Length: 186
Image (cartoon, rainbow, N blue to C red; front, side):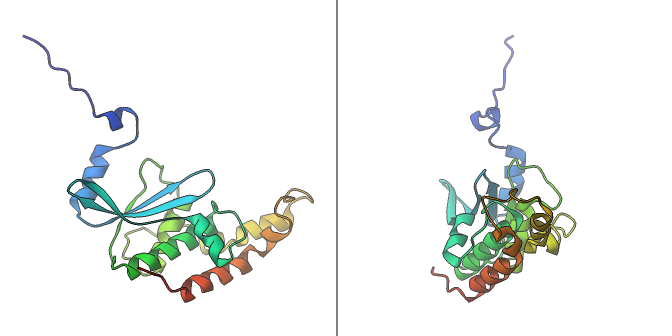
């Protein structure tokens, strides 16, 4: 009698897909809010399940904040929140009301960028289930922690950003107001 060897799927072998988690997300038949972080920005997608594969409804990166006057890093917690807020407004304008968060293989880090982005989408009006225990505090979201660190830092430590890091809370409020006033196109 021959033994049968089960070979896992190629994406599972390469560590790119957790099929158990994916199946649980797909069973809900609700669009997924896919949030991924890179070294330079945060990527957002609203994805629907289609018969031939996933269909991306909306896609953006946190670098789109530059159009609204954001002068700081595109990979910090305030930028993640603002980009999530922007994507949430875009999703609502495109008729998406409910989403399920999909963080992929990113580890669940309390107060991390991923959950700041999801909180931004929730504050925009999307129905997203996220616990308040894992969402960053308001001081981290507004950038006041970054500003306090920049004020306490030694001279020259923030040489590349100049004194801009101290003004991050002001720029956060300006960009948030610009997102609220921006008209999204379908």
